[in-house]
Length: 267
Image 1: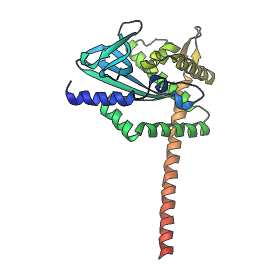
Image 2: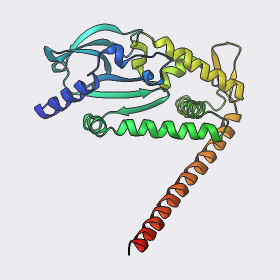
Image 3: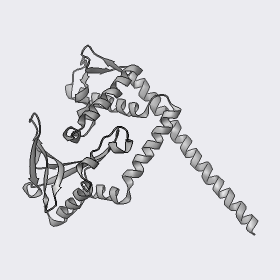
Image 4: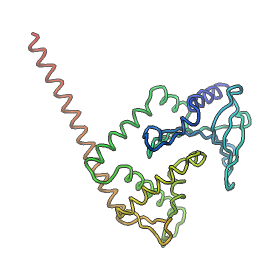
């Protein structure tokens, strides 16, 4: 690893880990802002089975980190310390999680650019505004719709891997949580928060008829109605976007007319 990449990696990790873990990983339900945390995982491109989830760094030696280490095939991760110098081709993956919303960065420069320009803050706020408007104008929650969409896409990926046309697919809620969320949540001391919240979302989808609970109370199956629901959601989103564009155009036109009127009066 050359010196420039090493410096860039050090800066990116410093920004991602600049707050202590209790603040970065606080998940108090009463405060929606506290659901926001940043997960950092380091992998070695030459050893794809290896992953190290960073929890904190040693400021006396910026190349060393403490966290959880695991390789593919291990039943659970173990506590460990790691140095970047041990990896021949390190790759960092930084995931911002804000409730059900996620932004994943696989590029150090992209993460630093988002942090410097606060692009992630603007994106999260825009998504929250869209969700609030969407929930008011349409009865189906935006969070439920996003989760249902991810579940359908996940089922399609599983079906491609299976290749069985008669495959009756069902899933456990913990398997779905692992597939839809970054693995860093399992290393969090309050990971049960995500489990409880995610199961409530799945139960709400069952009430809406988009999921079917199987004989095993922890297993679910996607209902055919789910595609109709997602179709209705996309139509409503399209209407919302068209309405937002029209509103912006009317605001701009009003501003131009007001400016022209002011100039006429000034003359």
